[in-house]
Amino acid sequence: MRDFLRTNILPGILGVSRSEAFDVSLLLCKSFIAQIESLSEISSQKYFLLLLNQFLLYAGNLEAERKESPTALLDELDRSVGILFADRTTCTFFTSPILSDYHWANHLHDGAAEHQSGWKNTFLAFTLIKGLRLYAKGKIIEEPQLISTKQGRPILDYVIRPSPRNETSFSLDSELFPDIELLDFVLTHGANPNASYTRRTIWVHHLDF
Image (cartoon, rainbow, N blue to C red):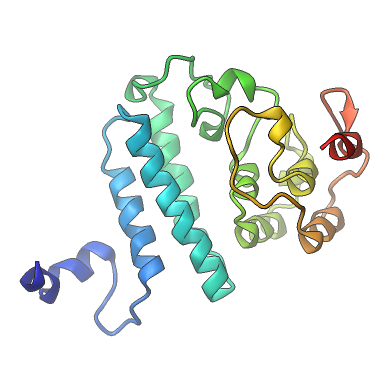
């Protein structure tokens, strides 16, 4: 192992040069992306979610450490996982059907597709759930329509209730309370404060929360 690490092979695999600063979180993100892209099928929910969650953990570390988002890597994650989920035969661990018109973020937990069908998660919504706020902000600046065109659960609701425990059977990762700066940001970029979801306004959901 020591001799392998001293060769020029590893930098080539990870896409870095010896002259670059050694960023552990960045290299681990690239490593987990490579492992996800190497999958020919998702036969183990536990293993796939391990890779995914480890990638998201270190992507979050990059946002915290660098004060900027690893946007290109997150976009690559979305693309790569989308390819896997596009072919239903590759996701052999699911017992609930994969809905072709739903983003893959709606199908991560077995049985959650039916429960979350009203959410209609997008990748932007998924990154808000996971606390990747810098990525979300960057995407909203690039494409403000991502807020207004989101169907199902409004983007503003993901900001106000990062972890709506009353509406899901599995735990989400963000903090319990909303980020006020992010709240102001999405309102400034077109989020509708009067939007409703499941026949109730966002604010009624928040008060019940």
